[in-house]
Length: 227
Image (tube, rainbow, N blue to C red):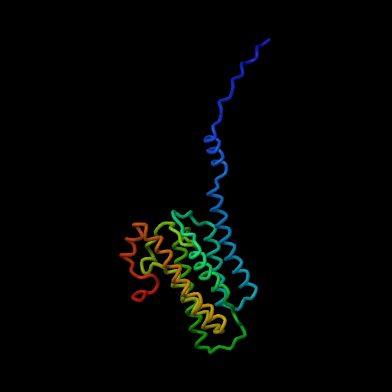
């Protein structure tokens, strides 16, 4: 008969080794990042669905395209190097993003044709500026103020926040096409929160020497020669 091979005692596993193994199995940071991306994307897809239910024509289509693209980009965002998560940043971002999504198309509203035509033109221009900038920004897109890497080329060489510029032009055009008191009020409420969020974001980004150098070459935030 063959003799049984000797059985050796397994080496004890330290708590540090166990924690390391668990960390590799459960990438909690990665899971939180995925969950955050899904949460942000769901907000834009819900806005897209809401506008689709009350579709009002071409300008509403442009609005839906923006919400859909932002939803897709939210799913593939890179993890930030640094982020500002505070009551101020949450309030500023929430009002800046959610308030304009509440604007409503009114297909049966009687509007001057010239005013409506100007509004439609602004909607197209704003969509091109904002969506083109988002596509150029790619996976660096985010909601809360964060540093996902400095993007300084393309439209970002003209102003530091071209997406906001496009959004202002788009929203102004939407209001001209559907000039209800409700839509005008939402636009007026959104603007100060946008400026507040930009201030918070730049306070964070200026800690990065690359962004500080970028600000020296691209002087204006949204409007050249103005702001």
